[in-house]
Amino acid sequence: MRNRYSLIQISLHWATLVMIILTYSAMLSRGMFSEDDESFINLFHFNFGITVWLLMFIRLGLRHYYGTPPIEPPLAEWQSIASKGLHWMLYLLFLSLPILGFLTLQFGGKDWVLYGFTVPQWVTPDPSWRKLLKQTHETLANTGYFLIGFHTLAALYHHYIRRDDTLRRMLPGK
Image (tube, rainbow, N blue to C red; front, side, top):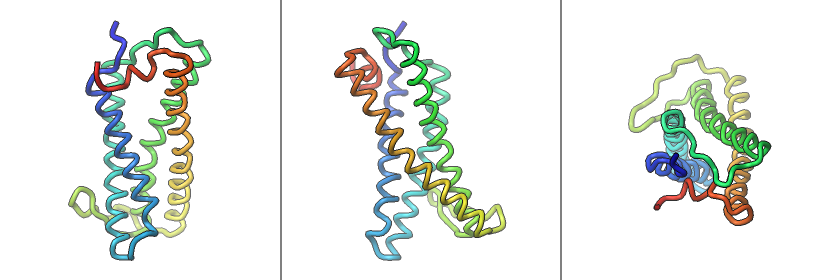
C-alpha cells in the first residue's frame, strides 16, 4: 500500500491552505483601506472563501476515491481518533464558513460579485438573521485559527518528536 497522498491531494491541500490564508488576510485587512477599496477587499474575501468551499468538496471526493495512506509507525488508538476528529472538524469548518458568509450577504440585501458575476438576491433581507449569521460566521472563523494552529502543531510534533511519516505523506516531492 502506498504511504503518501496522491499528487492531486497534496496539491489541493497546499492550494487550499493558500486560499485560506488569502481569505483570512482579506478579512483582517478590511479596516486598513478607504471605503472604496474596502468593498474591493470584501470582494476578494468572498471569492477566496467560495474557492475554499469548492476545494474542500473536491478534496472530500478525492479522499473518498484515494483514501488516506497509513501512518508509519502506526498511531496509538487515541491519536488516530483525535486525528480523524480534527480533520473532520476542519472539513466541516471550511464547508460551513462560506455558506454562512453567503447567507449573511443574502440576508443583508447586498449585491456582490462571484467570479465576475453578480449574485442575485434569493431571500428577503432580514437584519436580525444577517446579524445572527454574521456573528456565527465570525465566531467559527476565529475558531479556525485554533484548529489550523493545532493541525500544524500536530504535524510538527509527529515530524520532529514522534518522527513518523505523518507530515512527509503530505509534502510535495518524493
